[in-house]
Length: 566
Image (cartoon, rainbow, N blue to C red; front, side, top):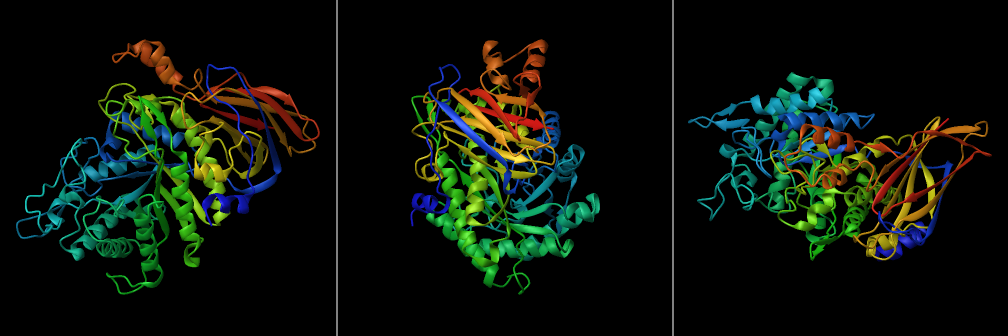
């Protein structure tokens, strides 16, 4: 059965859509109904996961500050995943490269451990109050195997050259030494941060081994995985281990790689121990696929959702894994965070409101897909952080630029203000899931909502999204929230907004004339504009027979959050 037919059968979704854009007149009206009395499942904090290539950025002034902001956006712990935790080098970060030099060998081949750089990264996490996803990669220089036919293979290859061409992506020359490296590193983390704390972390083996991130066969990766988790568990029985962090499962080869990995766990024996293969969580990646033309961008939201649905379908079809936690350990609009608008002018979309609006539209659909497939999704990791020493608003996929928060960070702040139980929503402007999976949002815009309810509060996330800039128009939206306790007569309403004039440091920077050397006063103004803003002062609204009605206008490429408390 094709995806669209499947979704129509499973969910019966349908609906029209209405408009977006921050300067155009409203061309349609949309009605959104929220039923707080109809629960759709827990509001799992999928949003609280972030990652980046350049682990050494964790210890810079701006990196430490951003880690603190990520901690502060969520009432529950935030998790951080970084590449290159085992890579050899001097600890100086480059685009798509970092290092810790944790492992080397002396002249006799005896391992030598140096934890100074690695400790700096994890100490920064501890100081900020965030927790790591310990990605076990990449291969230390002295442990990397020599590949046949590549006698002159360099270890380190820096961007813009092919950063995956070096020996840092090779299998180990000795799997027993690889296991011992992982054991020693895990034991060190337990000694430094405490057993109970490290038991709360996640240990993920490698990154995207099905492509050039790993220069070995899938059998070699399965062996790499087995020896790695044996090392982790030898140092910390009960540690959470998982993988395989494969790429988009809409690709047949990537799908097959993930399937083979899961079959190995389900029925195989560990190459390291001869026993069962541990797996506490499953990871794979989901990426959109924008197209760029004449400096403009058309997003590919359908591709990211197809990845998610196909991966969920595979896992749901294997009874052993239906309840295993799933982390989308990279889930993004496209693939290259380090490719700025200097590489492609269309990447400027990452500076403005399209990026957060896309993220909001995806977020709700992740819950819908997990519910329909009956799987246990626990995380959506945004591969975005910050880049040091670059121009202001250069167009990297990042959360901040030179210490200035970008609009996308504010959508995660909105997510962090939602919790409790997900409540049912319907919208006359919502694009059906079948359409989202097949063609994305290429016709009328997606004007829709997601709602949550706590003991004495509710939150409604609203968005007005279209794949293509310029196809968006503002929408007049009426939100009717029912299910407020019958004894309540008044509720406090707060309205937050991300649009062209709210929560948007980029728009303020553009209005300044795009300065690359802003004054201290301008920096202060940009920092203030980078936060999440209320549209107006909080107000008390009437509740009639358990119902609140809010009328608002959603500009194109905008996200709103209504919070009610009583």
